[in-house]
Length: 634
Image 1 (cartoon, rainbow, N blue to C red):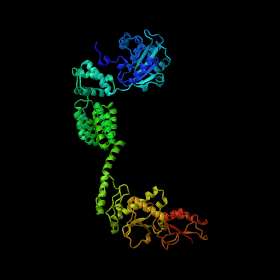
Image 2: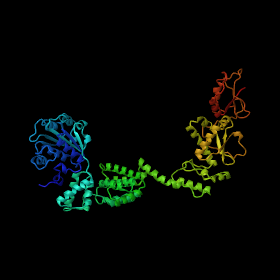
Image 3: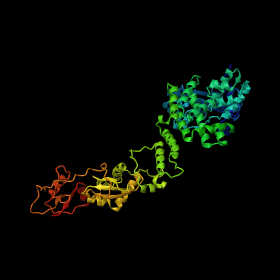
Image 4: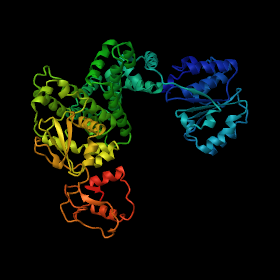
């Protein structure tokens, strides 16, 4: 009768177990000292020796030399345990016996009976996590206080599915994945015994593809040996296991580093014609990008060689290709994208389409809206920006310097919010422009906007939202009806206020407020022009013609022109009271145009004429100045 190699070479003693020394040593000491627990929980990935170790423990307790930590594996008891026919060793498959009735019939109803031959009855429950909740509850009491001759060994690959009430009643042992070196060494021993001709590259590939499971590695070795008629070559291993050549991975990674999406699609089209599994390609590419990330972070050295699993000569290509990606952050982003792709391929019906979309995300960050992709795009701009803002060798020509700087800003992607007209620079401004630090601030400072008739209009209007943000509502309210223009020198601003806005003029001329406005203008334009406030009828003759700016606040009330006085219907002729008059010189008392918004305010004042006049508050003064109304006593 022929057996598969993994059954033929199943460990017969504790010494034959590969890579689980911490478990082997603990169980041997427990058997030799007579401190065997009533329940064990063996956890770990597939092919790491859980069921084999459970049988070895049964041999140690039921061998003809029992109890012994070195069962010979040749006696009748050991042979029957290995063949699965010993009457005192019960191997149960929980995947096919999941219900309460199975637990009650095969375990609870039989544990009270004494063992037939040895000193113990041993229950090995494989894939115990498959039991239902009711079955676990039914087993709980028996597992907690079994008869003295009963030992439970529970095996599972998914320990998190075992209820905590079960785990706390067992001694837990975690089986580790086997290393590539351990698997390769054991495969070499099997190949020598079987007479296979093997190459070290093939054994290394088989061990890496086994992912830490010895059973998978032995099965692959047997399959490749049959394919090669007793010869295990690297080419045969690549063909059977679907391995992507390292050269192909380097080629694809170069295309990703160059962001050549067309070449990536052509590479995928050529690759899929070979019939290799796309999921395997994604796994191999993920491993390759991970190695590049390690090389980028660690650099050249023994540590990087150990982490990647190559010699010092084989590390050089990884370091060179990692440098082509620019930074480790880009490689980490690629790993995240490939991780998402691996999860998607499990349920995707179009594996090639999913792969091409992932490659597009890696080569064209604009097609990916994740934060990592946006960070990648910002990193590209940061690499371009320093050259765009580089200072020229000689500041002899300020105009050329300013033009080059504006071009660099445009290349870095900094858009101007509004077009600015042609420059008007006075000789005084040109003398100041000779100093580069004054005319061309660094990118970290405020922008430089030349003062022109067009820009002055926009700059003055932008002060209102700035003041609102600073909670300076009083100053923002006084902007109604104001206009700004350049003075004769071209270096300062003349702010024209309505003729009746004397209070606004005095408020703006307050040193504290004037300093605030100058500072805000510097933050917006990069310059600190002098400010001169004048009323509409007091415009200096030397000033340049006014340029009407956009209104930055509520529209100012038009000046009243009706000379005829008006009398309130509720006014008492015998009681002298304050009467509202126009702010224009020589106007008669309370002259209000029909469309003047101050009419409602005047009506409210007339209604209170009978009361004793009270002094106006500061807020009242601001309001009345805004609507162009003043008060004078008869």
